[in-house]
Image (cartoon, rainbow, N blue to C red):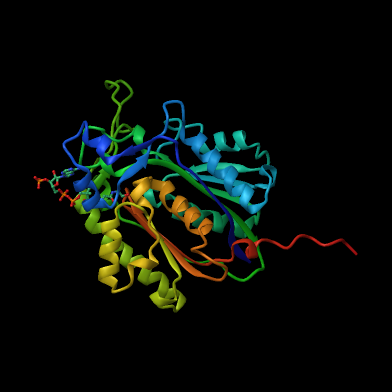
Length: 335
Ligand code: UT7
């Protein structure tokens, strides 16, 4: 049995915040941000938007591109670190209700910026047991948890959601190899307090994200190389066989450093962080949707997605893209 991505969708909030706009209230400049990150602007959600609402927009677009109705979906996984509610209900249940996906199981998965990669592999595993059409969504509203006075981190992030539909069938191709890794020794490198370590009687405080940027940068370059080489080694392919790599859209300088280190052309990496910033779990599916819709990924292409983030977590997926060709054949008239 093969598991294919048969539809993609994404959502970016309407409001665009440029580097110049940030420089009006922070000690920074467009020149510094762009030269250190490759980011020029990001989308920021309106006050009345939520992570689940963004996820629903992306999921509807993915279902439309796969040609499926919500009631055909058997499983919804939402990768997010910025759930609508602190613990429960899950964002996935809110998405299930809003879509009218009345036959779907639904749960959230938290692996920070690697969440979408983890969720894809979790879905692929579950589909071996129950091969139902599945929605995998990466959605994050980072604007709600960053410290807007910290120039070391807030300039990086944006809000978005991206979604894919997975379908299982006997068409060769689809998701081929996956590598999922973690390194909890770096837990404090990107951290947001305010969980169960905080006693209920302690003074209530809204905690914001704290990050040791340079250490995360070095970690990202190292593990990106490790994951991509590991995936190619498993499949017996060379970098030149890859039509496209979708990296986590954290910082263009990370991707450039990886390309230099591996001695491979930068053009193979699809980047859109210039206009999105780092949207955490949404970053890979949003970039994937753009790459698919622009025709950068075509039938039979070998492609990879690589993520890294808080936890620390990291991982990648190697797949033979079939898109529409990977959809189950419509059942013919019974004899
Ligand atoms: O999804 C994973 C999430 N995180 C990441 O991917 C983050 C990875 N790290 C990075 O992207 C980079 O480390 C940053 C963009 C965060 C920082 O760039 P850097 O080249 O590593 O800068 P740095 O932290 O080494 O800081 C260099 C200088 C410092 O000033 P001093 O101490 O040398 O005077 C910073 O205070 O740059 C200063 N700086 C800034 N200056 C202007 C840091 N942020 C800014 C800023 N504007 N926004």
